[in-house]
Image (tube, rainbow, N blue to C red; front, side, top):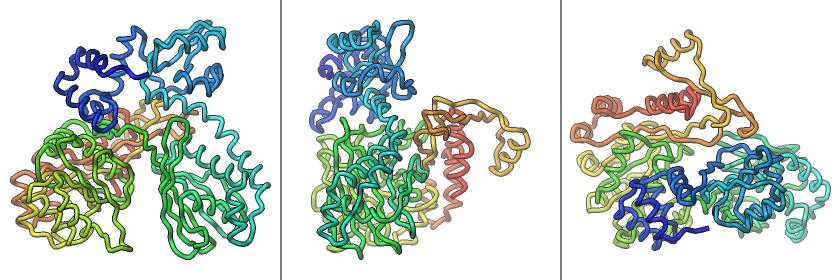
Length: 562
């Protein structure tokens, strides 16, 4: 159900959280970008999703049901068949004394309530839930996949008999057993919130692994013999050469799962025992995350919000591979993406399509590198440019000159700290006085696992442990609060679900600019930044530990990598 823009305006502006001007601007952008006004308001950080949900629930005069994080008992979920739950956009989440609590996208859908009442024989108490909450909760119907996964795989492996030549291999890839194995692996990966699927061919077996919350886990192993047909299936779907086994191949494949568009970014490389596959899963229908949802708060958030509104200069995001740099840049781009500006990006690879943004991908085979692509982009009259990564002198020089000539440039750099980005630029041959004039802010980040909200507990480490931590970190942890997840069904007994960023944001002030022109070391720049109030990554992590978002072990794991 979609409320009209006028109704939404009346609800949200009337609440006082958003001004009429802010709402009108968001509605205009939403129309141009084919998005919902609420989504634009959220990723611009003007209001959060839970507040919107409560306001709309109040409008319908029903309670707000935040079902996204609930671990719904299977016996309650099964009261409404999955097919009808998806048709009516409803989720049963609690049964109490002859009453069924029902999360609904449209609490005025009397047909849905009547169906639920007839089908269950229970009285219905309706709750309003946001569209995203309903989608996430509907995913709990997939819990059964876990129990059936290995059984389905084992049954279909027995039925596979791939041919020896390429023609037979192509036919085998289209047969039911291989299709079923591949689809089951995909469905299970999505239900487990996996970001990557690894298919690795070993000497005597094939191992399928999922990366969940940044950690790889073995999922299933099966004997050699069917991997050629399975990989052929992947190649066919992603338009790769089925008869090429000697060189790496990269492809893409999109499919629709329930209401979600899932994009697979596929990489296949030849290994010692056969071809290995890694598939990155991207849910294209997900709303872009706001900076707050990524984990940026307080002083760090203020610096970024101030600097992304500047008409020119450079904002850099640093960190190792897999630390969420590109996600942060995409969130900033979605805030800046209005019809008044032209945004161009050059990426390797393009992860998400953004409406009304000119995006293109580097292609070394044709000579299209970051430097040549960036030079070409400058002829497209952009206001804002995003460069996937600055990795050489030529790209660095063009990016700096772009920032000097009135463009806002966003990019990433592989350094461990925010202060370390400056010497890295100078090492690439950038002129210190030009760098000092162009860089506005540098963001360093890492990803840590979030404590499962269903089994979080507060605890106090032994005094000897607390003292050792204080000594190792060089700070007093006397008043520090500690939390952890005990492990439950919802988090697969890991104690964690999802990830959040920890950050340090260096604002390039006048004193920092002077240090840059003096070719100061990263330690000298770091010391001055801290003296001026920069929140270090360690401190931001400890703040998130005190807030119950993550554990001290997770913070130490990523901070000690520096």
